[in-house]
Structures are given as structure tokens and as C-alpha cells.
Length: 165
Image (cartoon, rainbow, N blue to C red; front, side, top):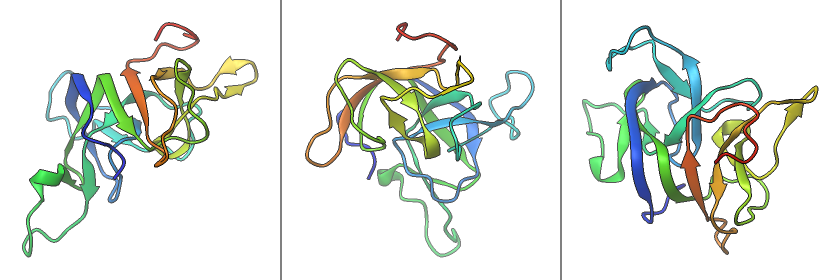
């Protein structure tokens, strides 16, 4: 489990699909491919958990667990907020959550940046003096004994926005 129930979902986005078979909720999804126009059922509008954060555009925090099950034998567990691989996902763009998808230490008040595999970190990476990962939110607590921390999410993030979140 990557998210606890203690959260505030201010703004969510349901216009993207995800093809990752086993992505866990609680991480930051980035653009994989984009569709055209504003249609909510644009199948080319895909998000993913990027292997590396550099150069990727963060879209939102994943609120669903991705599964790849044989639906002729069992159905999706809606009580666990599961979505079948290739389905439409819910992304948190503004609000706060308690997640354990954190790499390294978390300090209350510090900006939260995207790192590898959709995780959050307090360390900003840079490539050649250019900010590679803009802040996606701010830590509102340090990690507890189970490695969970409260994080405010505010997307879309603007490049080189060191303190605007």
C-alpha cells in the first residue's frame, strides 16, 4: 500500500490512461504520449512511472492501483480502487496525501521533487545547471516509523519554480 486514507483531494484529473501493469498508487505519473484536442477519451493520452525523472513532465499523483487480471475469471476490486491495465486513471493535481513513495529523507516544509519510478524526494536534480525536476509539491511532515509522510501536491509544476509551491 502506497497511500493511506488520510488525504484531501482538491483537484483530480481523469483524462489519462495508463498501460503499466503493476503501478502502485501514491507516486507521480508523467506524460508518456499525448493525444490531441481536449477529448476525455483520447487513448493516446498516456501516463507512466518514468524510469528516470529527468526530462519528464509530471502530471499528477496516481490514486489507483494498476492490475492486469483475467476479467473473465474475476472482476476488478473497486473497493481497493483498482484499474485494469490500459484503463483510465485518476490523478491528484492539487491536494495532499500520506504516501510512502518517498526516496530518502523528508523534511517538513521542504519542496518535493519527482525522482525515479514516480517517487518523491527532497533532493532536486539538475543537469548542466538546468533544473531537471521542478517541484511537484511540498512535504508537510517528516517520515513516520513506517516511512509515510504527508505531502501537498500542486501540479502542473513550472520549470525553475524553486519556491512557488
